[in-house]
Length: 156
Length: 166
Image 1 (cartoon, rainbow over the protein chains, first blue to last red):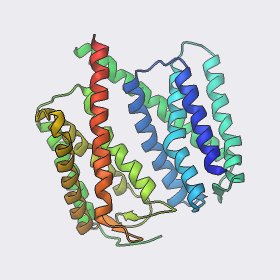
Image 2: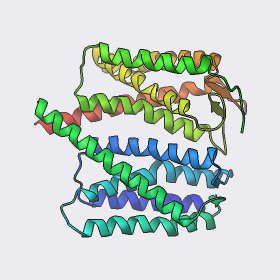
Image 3: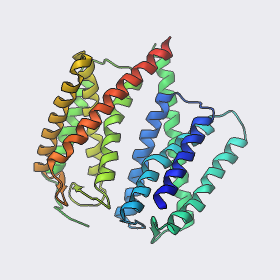
Image 4: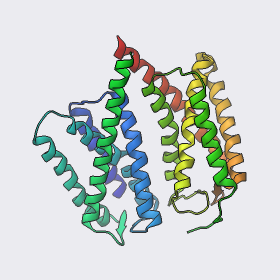
């Protein structure tokens, strides 16, 4: 059940990402996805292994479900958010991004209900802080990657 | 938490020297790719390191620990960064030797054997600590798979940049 849920969520994210208008090139998005995965895994390793604020269920199904989220879903959501932040819309893009950020709260509850994660020293504000940090990092990386592209165009 | 040692010794030196040699090689060899492609070929290695180490060395399998403890340390992060120049050199040598399609399996095999050798040295230096019966030979199919994916990615990225230019 837990693995099926996480795979379904991931597939929904892939579907939405493939539908929305993209402001970045495919190569830029691949770089951003890889960098976001590295960042996500590092932060989660600190929170989970070093600080022990969250524990992950060690059963095969639950831990695989967690890996699907960490390795695929969360970095792809960040790629999606970075694309949305590049839209020319004034307020709507921020409302959508805040909406995506708030969706991580019920997600956290569901993960705990499905016994994938166990919050030891963790609350909902930490979830918001962590994902806000991911979004800020992803936006900064997007800025860096797109600057890199404009520099490259100038060199050509 | 498993603690293997708590001093600055062989494993840390191995990572720092390896990283320095890799970065020096990247700086010194003539450039063959655009800055964006340099970046993406570096990230390929770092990403692959993170991907496999954070899936194979965590529960439920937890086949090995990296460096002095099973905690995530800054030197672990540097050890993943040292995969960056290696993946760059992989792509560089692929272009430099103009590997023909029929020789790609041999090229991949050569790099997989080289990676096995590097992993063996890393184990001797105390970078990796195998658990649960994990063995050096189990990494071999992973290297073959990763290197094959890199070749596919190389052709994909080249095709994309070609189509962007036209």
